[in-house]
Amino acid sequence: MDLREVLAANLRCLRHLRGLSQDDLAYDAGVGRNYLSQIEKGKYYASLKFVGKLSVVLQVEGWELLKPPEGVIKE
Image (tube, rainbow, N blue to C red; front, top):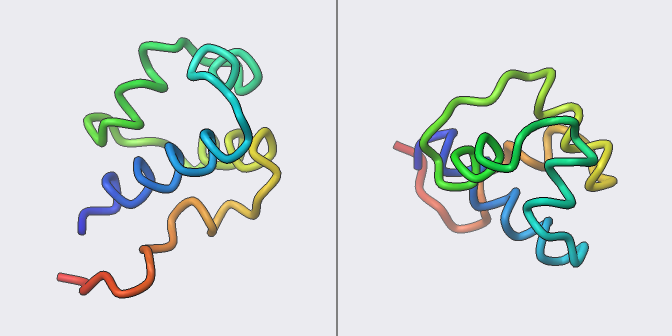
């Protein structure tokens, strides 16, 4: 699983758990919704600075956004 895919999956999951729309999360993180959408699709790379912003908004540690799901085989 590519790191972009890991971030995308974790981001979608946490955003849904927090009851946030893409618009809400993008606004709170200070980025455009289109950029956030591309990150959630695994199309764009995210900087560590952006991962840090997302972790603050989602109230998780930054590493939690980059941790592969349990049971996923690393390639």
